[in-house]
Image (cartoon, rainbow, N blue to C red; front, side, top):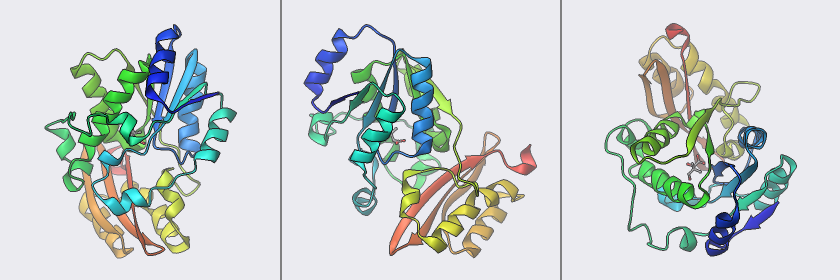
Amino acid sequence: MQLVKDLEQWQRLRSELDKALGFVPTMGALHEGHLSLLRRSVAENELTVLSIFVNATQFNNQADLQSYPTSIEDDLKLAQSVGVDLVLMPDYVQMYPDNFRFQMHEEIFSQDLCGSDRSGHFTGVLTVVLKLLNLVQPEKAYFGLKDYQQYLLIKDMCAGLFLPTQIIGCETLRENDGLAMSSRNRRLDGVARDVAGSFNGILYHSNSDEDAISALQALGCNVAYIKTLYGRRFGAVEIESQGDTVRLIDNLVPENLK
Ligand code: PAF
């Protein structure tokens, strides 16, 4: 496995590769969910590229950025164990030589759900994903469906901009109690972890978005939104844990729409 931090070196290396690449972009703090994307990419492509880049431009809240978990050494070991070939790990100056002067903005769906209370979040996501796809030029790129809105926006961006990469959505991996796997879960302590474990069940069993909101508020969650769209129920909550606020998102087809 080769680790590349310098983008000039990466671009030289990429121009010499004539193999079909699978790509899994991440912000690190790898968990089983990421590993399942990487395993699928390794199975379906000649070479797999993992990127690890905590993208500051998609955080509208500095505290959230500062407390975003990092575990580079473990990430590299895990990546190697599943057969990743190349790891791209640039820093902010490398990724944003324009200092975010050029931005990829979507006007409609990015303003809803997570975009409604995280101003500019999807502009940061789409801008960095566009940069990464330009750098890696993968045949296939893999995204978890926990971030369903992100997946749809990236898929539509690629179609709208005629990018050749196939965007593949992969099922959400869950803990035993149904909590969607997320790097942020490691910031949850005992009680907060129990509350987080009820989130998906409430999304699933509630007969309406309003019922889900009431049930989550009764558990002490701050509900950012619960909304049923396109036959799926989407939700985001904030849970207090260890003096910290942890934001969790999830989406599923609720029981009453099956
Ligand atoms: O889903 C993520 O981890 C990030 O939003 C992504 C796609 C790596 C862009 O920074």
